[in-house]
Image (cartoon, rainbow, N blue to C red; front, side):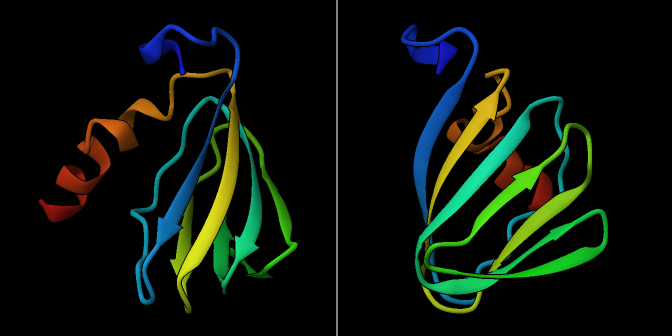
Length: 100
């Protein structure tokens, strides 16, 4: 991520969501690719629900509202381009906004 000075145009990472976890609905400039490594759940993009399981690959276009819902523990490899949108998760900003 640019925040760690190791990339300028893309950010990638691995997230593990516990069973029952739902990320806040959000959108960002970055296009996003999510690859489900383990578990099952769903990803909602612009009010369209996509069931996911290990091996699923989901592309989220720029600026569309989306969220991820874990049925089982869900491990996701993700890639953002351009980088920058990941900072809301690293800083905890997304969680704080969801609590309000």
